[in-house]
Each structure stands twice: as structure tokens, then as C-alpha cells.
Image 1 (spheres, rainbow, N blue to C red):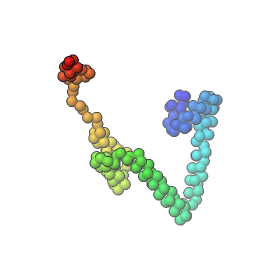
Image 2: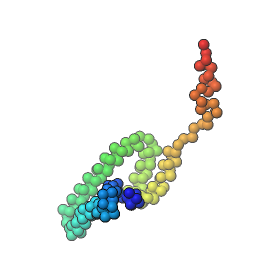
Image 3: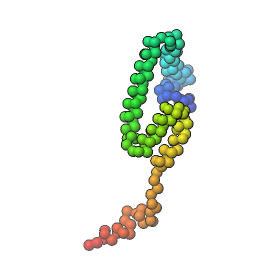
Image 4: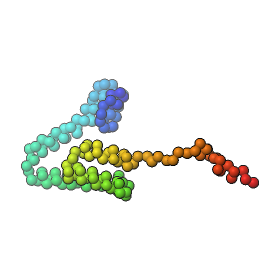
Length: 152
């Protein structure tokens, strides 16, 4: 358990470590991590080798452009589904627009944009301070309301 909590990574890998450790100890944890990471690593290595040997092929370039277009479409759909509420207010739209311009056209690194716009966003959406209450207002029957209860 301690091993999975200290390692960064996906919950699935952490869960594999926990299960492997519970079933077979340290060896089980090691085998479970290898089982989770090795297949995907092999696939990525094979794809990298195939790309390296075929990167100048026009069909490969068109295939990758199609994948890129699909990825942009999927990310756009998810962004619109998750952020639908954020497209309703002017400050939200301004932050989204400035972020888009800074990353896409000015070519600023995302972490620089986040460091700049993050504090502005936090300030815009900070909790509003309400007016202080008088000592009697926190009671369910403050002085102004008591006389209504005992009227006959």
C-alpha cells in the first residue's frame, strides 16, 4: 500500500501495485507493474519504429493528420460538454479567449499563461465577503422577530 501511495501515476497502476503486493508481496507488486506498463510500452515502441521508418511517406502523413483532426474534435467536444457553464458569462469568455490567443497565436508556453491568468481568475472568483452580522442575528429568534411569536 505504501508503495502505491508514494509512486506517481495512474490509479490503475497504483491499484495494480496494491493488488500485487496483497497477493504476492514485493514480487507481486513488481510483476503487476510490469504487466500494466509493458504492453503499452511495447506498442508505443513499435509505433515509434514504424513512424521513424515511414515518416516521409505521404500516406502516413495523411493518416496522422486524420488522427490529429479526430483528436481535436474529441477534445473540443469534451471541452464543450464539461465547460458549457463557463461560456455564459463575460469574464469566463474573456479568460478563455485570452488563453486561446496566448497559446495559439502568441505561442506562449501553457505554464506561463496559467501563471499569468491563474491569479486573475482566482481573484475574479474569490468568495465575496458578506456584511458582518449583529450578535443577535445568528440566533433563530433575534429581537426583531420575537414579538411576532408571542402575539395573541
